[in-house]
Structure formats: C-alpha cells, structure tokens
Image 1 (cartoon, one colour):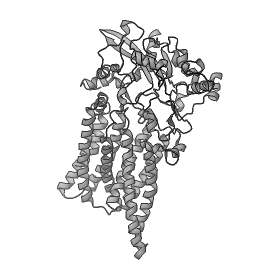
Image 2 (spheres, helix red, strand yellow):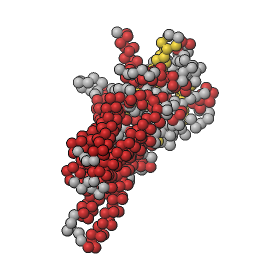
Image 3 (cartoon, rainbow over the protein chains, first blue to last red):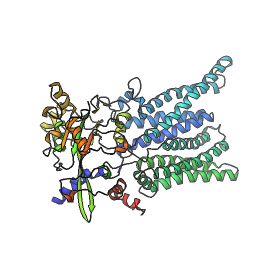
Image 4 (cartoon, one colour):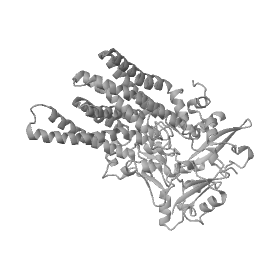
Length: 320
Length: 257
C-alpha cells in the first residue's frame, strides 16, 4: 500500500524533470492543430502554384482548402473559438510580438483578397463578360490583386513554421530553417495537387509541372536533411527529437510517410515519366496521393517529436 | 518595483504545504496545480536519491508566454507579475508550449470534473466558483497571489512582510523556505538572500529573467540527499531521459522498441 502511494507521488511530478513531449498540439484535440497545419500547407502551396500557372480552378481549390478546412480546424481547436477576433488588430496589439496573431491576420486578409482574386481572374479569363477598356482595367487590377494575394498566401503558409520556430522551449523547432522547410514542402505539395486539379479541368502543362516537381522534391529532401542535421547538433534535447523521429517511435511515420510516400515514390514516378517520355494518369494519381500522405506525415512527425527541455538542469543549481 | 521569490532548497522539507495552500487559496480544479514539487531521481554510488524542487510560474521579466499570446490576455503588470486575463484568452495553448518551464496548464473540461466526480459539488467547490471562478477553455498559472498583494497594499501592508499581503504559499511554509519581496529594493529580504547566498534562476540560457530564485542546492541538509555535483545538463538528460522509456536507448545509440 505504501509502495503504491510513493509511486503515485513520484509519477505526479516526475514528468517535469525529464525531456517531455509537447502534447498540446498533437494529442487529443491537438490532432486538430495537426490537420489545420497540414491543410494550411496544402492550401497555400496549391494556391501559390495555381497563381504561377494561371490555373483558376487550382486557385479556387487552394482557397477553399484554407477557408473550409484550415480555418475551421484551427477554430475548433481553440478553447474559446468565438473569441478568435481578439487576435486581430485593432482589437489586439499582439501582432507586434505574436506570430499566431500575425498568422490569423494574414489568413483573414488572404481569405478576402483571395476571393477578390478569384473574381477578377474569372472576369478576365471568361470570354464575353468584359470587353475593351473594362477588360484592360480588370486585367491590370487582376495583376495587382494576384501580387497581393501571392504575398499573403506565402505569409499564411509560412506563419505556422515561424510560430513553431519561435518556441525556445522546444529546441527541435527553434531554428530558422523550419519555416523554409514547411514552405518548400508546401510548394512541392502544391505542384502535386495542381496536377490532380489538371486531370479534371485541363489547362495544365503536365510536363512543366513534373519538371518543377522533380526539382522541388529534391530541394525538399535536401532541406529536410539539412534541418535534421542542423538541429541534431543544436542541443541534446533537439538531438533526442531527431532520434525519436528517425529511429524512435515516430520512425515509421518518417521513413514510410515522409521519405517513402512523400519524396521517393513521387520522385521515382516523376523520373519514370521523364524517361518514358509520356505521363501515365494512373501513376500520376498514385504520385499525388503519396505526396499528400507525405504532407500529413511530415507535419505529424515535426509536431510529435517536439520535446521540451527538462526544467531543472542540475548544473544550474549551486550546491551547498 | 518587481515582486520576486527566493526558495531555499536546504530548508524545504518537501511537505507539500505550499501546494495545498495554493490549491485552497485559489480553489483550484481537481487536476490543476499551480505550485508543484518536482522530484528528481538520481543515483550516486548505487544509492537512489530523490531531490525535490518547488516550482511555480517564474513571472519572467522577458516572458515568452506574454510575447506569444495572440490576444494580449497574458500580460505583465508594472510590478512584474505575469497575469492572464481569462476573458481575453482564446485557449490556443501557444503560451503553454512556449513556456520553457512548463508552468502553465490549459483548463479543459476533463481537468475540472469536480472533487468527487459523479457527485454533487461540495460547499467548498461551490463557494470557490463564486470567489475564484476558473474558466474552462482558458490557460491557468500561478499569479504570485496578486489579489492578496493588491488587497494588502490597499491597506498599506507590505508584501513579503505582512501576512495579509503575502502569497499563500509563503505564509504556509512551515520551514520558512520561501521568501517574498521586492527584487528592486536592495535592502529587501529577497535581494539580500540572492546577493549573499548566490541566488540562481532556472534555465538562465533562455534569458527570460525569472523572478523566482533558488539558493543552495541540497535537500534536507543530509549528505545523502545532496545531488551529485558533477552532473551537467547533458548528463542529466542522458541519465533521466525516459520519454516513453525509449529516450535513454536512443541517446546511447541502441534501437528503440
């Protein structure tokens, strides 16, 4: 009986003196944060690629992913979702220091500007709606709106990474390379998704997208490797996170999901298409599905192995 | 003026009275604890030892939780106390993650099931809801008993000196291991202790400038209870890391289960 009591007492407080996984953003309701961040990456990537390829349907899908999936999941996670407006200026001045506040503001602005961009682009690309001077004015306006929407979507895509990299308490995230990894991964995901959109709507130069996808996938793989190597030498807690990711409990998610499905399979399919000289729709669909699964795995892995440094490092206690 | 606390690790007897006093003072929900005693298990020459450190919100002067809060719900008063405006908190838990000391708790429904789940709330709980309401869906943390400090100062009392203006944990500490006072006053008890006994802050490398200082480092005054001197942060992690039992193996290069 006494043993049980002592053990219970130990368990209560033991967790604070050893490296401890962050759970708030990945376990239980934290799953919603993971989903929201994945859709953030997918939506922003797709929208950005659609802007560069002048694909209206792609832009629409990207915008919808952000507005109908990312935002609701993020809101559903909040303890008090109806108060979300408090994060934005002029209701709060927190944007001066908080990346979350900035992120919400970017997302809301993008939702509005992105919607306007969809309308202006639709008007300029649909025949017989506008002609003459009105069309010229709308084309100029569309260009301006696209530039603003492009900047906002990049900020929307990158803020989650910046938010995480700001946390000194989680050494694995506390590096400037993380937002870049997330942004490039998002663009790679966007290139895959635009091919899926193109299969239904047409108007896509698949060979050009495939070429861009190959380069982005390789850059993405190198960036992930650089990120892991960099944080590996940053601190012991970060090293522990890396080991958890590559040989620990999350290793299956990393090797199968991130590396296998997210990078290797799409890359093999891409090179097969390159050497075969033609694109197989079946293989393309497989590549898109694998790529998207990789996006889910990457975010899961990064969030799951976020580990806090122990609170009481003994070398900081002066011994009497 | 900057309120601060000094914790004498020699005097602390691990009695948990500060934990209980805080719970009673703030009518804390069942699974929420603002003041904690963390237990550090070490092994020296084959003898297992437990060292304990009382921890609470450090009321950092450069508080990461204040910086990351998207609504300014976490804010710092002029006297250095970090407060949470529960009417502004949206429950995003960014502060919980950003706190290097993990001294914040998100109050979810399951953390507040009542002291006797399935039964009617006690009179103590009902009274607590009137006097110190805890909003589910927001974040919680120690506030140095700011309400006691404010009420005491209005009466002309001095926090750290007068009972009614001093945090409950400090008042209740039977070993007088906790000292409270103004860190900006060089003649205050806390300033003298820090100066004379070499007060140190937790995790100084984060540069958050905590207002809670620790003096000495042995527990209970017995040699067998002194934590090993040669420990370093790295060794500490190697020795204790047991993130789900696998960390130690991972760090030594072995394959995890």
